[in-house]
Length: 268
Image (cartoon, rainbow, N blue to C red; front, side, top):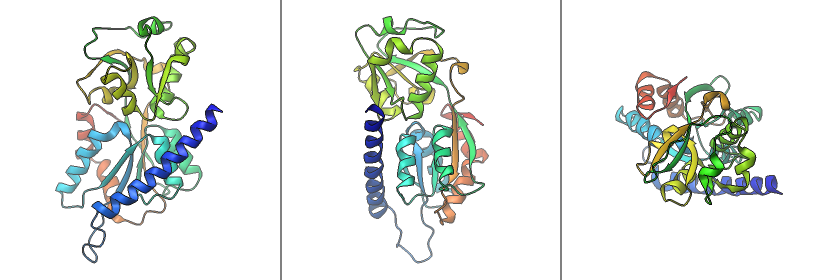
């Protein structure tokens, strides 16, 4: 039923991502431009990393390397893409669960996995809506929603949604809003629903809220209400591209860490 529908949807998303990534590689990457020339690494990354990782890729390219090809989506869809054989070098997930999923299937390069970043979970509203909420046990989320719905990444599979459901459950309000959740395919899709005024409230990461002036943070979820938000990075076992390992090491270094910090991530 619901879980089966989610699985089918993720499988279709994974297939679409494999096709799209293959097309991007053919159209945009000079794989055969010159014999022996370095090949751009392909990085699959959680949707919430768009601005920060793009800035890090630009910094890497300024060092004379081919600019990494970045593919952003829900971590769940990306993990399925890796499982389906996508030609990628690195995976950057928004939670440990999907990285572990790949690790248990032998799809990560041994010894390359590292906890890279952290984040904060927040409640957002359209910027035009003057609102503040103290997020605590039993807080009036359902009443504040009014007749509207709550935008979240799919809580059955997508990290931001999973963290969100865990927090709302711990705070004793999930049962009041569960039937009013709009299940978005990733955290940026949930953000867009709020930014366009199609949902009065949404749950996203703090870094997502910084990405658009169309939303405002109305409350911050206590860190103890959900598991720590961790972004692990790993090289994929099938990757043979030295540029992939080079970019992985760059992401662990001081220049990239400063970029992530500027975009609101915490460092692990």
